[in-house]
Amino acid sequence: MIRQAYANHSPMFIAVDEIGHHGDADAVASTVDRGVGMVATCHGETLANVVNTPTFWPVMGAIREHGLERQRRTEATFDVAVEVRGVGRFVVHDRVSQAVDEVLAGREPRSIRVGNWPNLRTG
Image 1: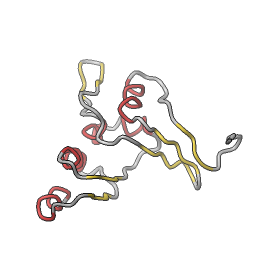
Image 2 (image 1 turned 90 degrees about the vertical axis):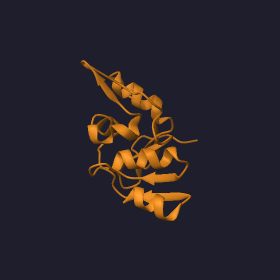
Image 3 (image 1 turned 135 degrees about the vertical axis):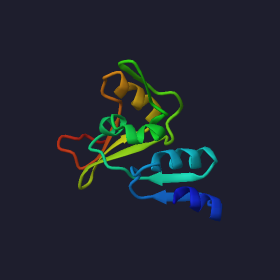
Image 4 (image 1 turned 45 degrees about the horizontal axis):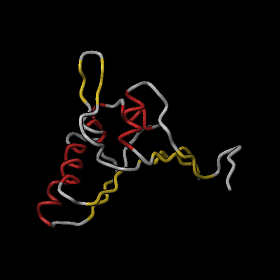
């Protein structure tokens, strides 16, 4: 459906609720590569959960397995990823490609906590 919307309507921007069905991530990545702005959601507890789900690999930087190792081959489709952790609680990854590399290396990605977190200091 994403490819049809692009082909038939030449949009400047598309919002997609829940990528994850067969071919969705490929369609999103190729549409963004053509210059269409995109906001999309997907199911995953954390960015690491999404990175570790092969269905989402096309938008996470065309991740490929090489033996026991996984590598990002291109820039991630999105610049920013937001984890919704609860009512008023968000974790923002403002450099998705770098965050994906951290996850693939087994490290916690740099992120920004936003919202109503216990012990969150602002200012």
